Amino acid sequence: MISAYTGTQIREAEKPLLDSGMGAVLMQRAARGMAGAAIAELRSRGHRLYGSSVAVLAGKGNNGGDGLFAAAHLAGRGMRTTAVLASDTAHPDGLAAFRRAGGRVVTLTDANAGELAALAGRADVVIDALLGTGAQGGLRGASADLVSRLAAGSHGLVVACDVPSGVDADTGEAGGPVLPADVTVTFGGAKAGLLADPGADFAGRVVVVPIGIEDALPWPALRRLEAADLAALLPRPARRAHKYSRGVLGVVAGSPAYPGAAVLACRGALAAGVGMVRYVGPPEVADLIRHSCPEVVCSTGTVAETHVQAWLVGAGMDGSDEDEMQRVRDAVDSGLPTVADAGALPVMPDVLAPQVVLTPHAGELATLLQRLGADLDRGAVEASTLAAVRRAAGLTEATVLLKGASTLVASPYQDFYSQSEGTPWLATAGSGDVLAGIIGALLAQVGPDVGRFRERGIDPDERWAAIAAMGASLHGHAGAAAAAGGPLTAGRISDALPEVWGKVSTLSN
Ligand SMILES: NC(=O)C1=CN([C@@H]2O[C@H](COP(=O)(O)OP(=O)(O)OC[C@H]3O[C@@H](n4cnc5c(N)ncnc54)[C@H](O)[C@@H]3O)[C@@H](O)[C@H]2O)[C@@H](O)CC1
Ligand SMILES: [K+]
Image 1: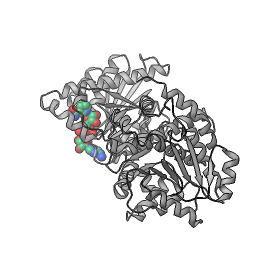
Image 2: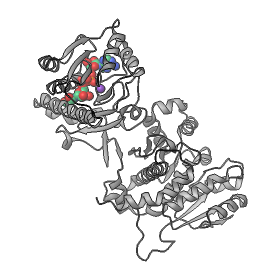
Image 3: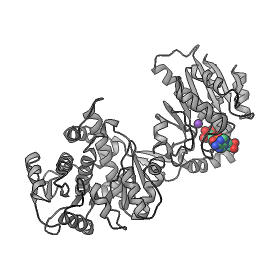
Image 4: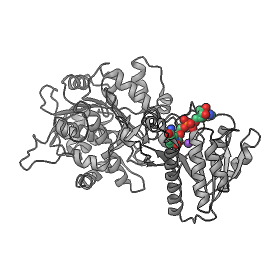
C-alpha cells in the first residue's frame, strides 16, 4: 500500500526534528536523494554524467534550497551546473554550497525569461525547485513565463523537487503553468496531490526519499493499493465452495437502446470470479445476454424475488423503462452492497449509505453535485478531482468512485484511494460497464468478510471504498495487459482479467 500525505501532515511530522535543530540534516537527506534519483534516471537513459549539464530552477524557499544542494552534488559528480534563481533571494546555505561546487548563477527577470528558458531547455537535466509544499497558489510572473516557455519547447529530463512547482501538494490542483516532470522526487512520504489529477498528470514517476520523519507520519490522506494488497484481499474459493456461497450478483442494466452495456457488465462480473450472475430486465436485453454469456441466469422478476448478495444497477440504462427504474430504486433500498453506474445516478436518493458505490465519470459527478446544490461543471471537477470526490461522498454519504486516468475513491468517512494501473486505451466505449461488473462481483464476494480488511489495515466500515479501489486496480491491470501498448475494446478487459487475477493473487506478501 502506498500512503500519501498532505503538505501540512509532512510539515507537522518534520516539526519536532526542525525544533531540535535537524533542519539542515533533513535538507541534506532530501538533496542527496534527489541527486541520486537524477543520476539513476540519466544513466537509465544511456547518458554519461561527466560533462552532462543540469539547470536548477530555484525558488527562494526550502524547496529551492533542496534543489541547490542537489545540484551541488551533481556538480561534484562532474556535471556542468547552472542555477536560475527565481528572485533576488535564495536559500543562503544552498546557494553557498552551489557556488562552492563551481555552479554558475543567473537571476530571472521579466526581461530575460525567454533567454533563460532557452538556456534551461538546452540542459540534459532540469531540476524544478521553484515551489514546494510552502506554495500559496501557482507560479506567477517571470517564473510562470519561464515555465510556460520551457514546457512548450524541447528540453531534457525534468526532475521535480518534492512536487512539480505549481501543483498543490494537498489537492493536486494546478493554479497556473506547470512543467511536466519525468520523475518527481518527494521527501518523507508521497504527497496526496501527486496521486490525484491534474497533479498526477505532471508528476511522472514518483520516487519517495525517506528523510527520517516516517515514524512520525499520521494516518495518510490518501492511499493506493498495490499488487500485494490485492493478493491479500482478493477472494479464493474454499475447497467446498458452491456457486451460492461464492457470491451471487444481481444485475439491473441495459435497455433496448443500449443492450451491450448489460452484456459487458455481466462479462466483467463473471470474469471477476462471482459464483453466479442473475440478470433482471427486459426480454430484449436478456436475449442478447443469453446469447453472449450463457452463464447468466435471466428473469423479468422483481428485486425482492431475486436472491443475491450484491447489486449492480444502471449500466446502459436510459430511464425509459419504469420497471427497470423501480428495480434500481429497490436494489438501493434493499441495503445490500450496490454499485450504481451511469443511468442509475440521476435517480439515486440524495442520501445513501457507504455500501452504495457510485461510479461517475467527471461529467456525471458534476451533474450529481449540481443536483445536490454545488456550483461545479465538468471542467471544475477535472481541475480539482480530489475535492470533488470528497464533496460528493460527504454529501451523499455513499462511497464515490471518480473514473479517470487516476481513479479516485472516497468513503463517506473520508478515507481515500487513488488507483492508476491503467492505460489511456481504457478510455473506450463499454470500459466503465466492465468496471461496474468487476466492482459488483467483488461486492458480492468479499463485502461480508470484514476480517480480511481489518488484517490489511482497512477499517471494516471503510471496506466499501477499498473494494471499489480493488475493482479499479484490477480493471487497470487487465486493461493494460489486454492493450499491450495498442488499442483495446472493452470486452477484452474481461478476457484478460482471469489471468491478471491469477498473477496478482499468487504474489506473496
Ligand atoms: N521543512 C523541512 O524540514 C524540509 C523541507 N523540505 C523542502 O522544503 C519545501 C517547503 O519549503 P518552504 O516552506 O520554504 O516552501 P517553498 O519552498 O515551497 O516556498 C515557499 C516560499 O515561496 C514563496 N511563495 C509561496 N507561494 C508562492 C508563489 N505562488 N509564487 C512565488 N513565491 C511563492 C513564499 O513566500 C516562501 O518564501 C518542501 O517542499 C521540501 O522541498 C526538505 O528540505 C526536507 C526538509
Ligand atoms: K518543486
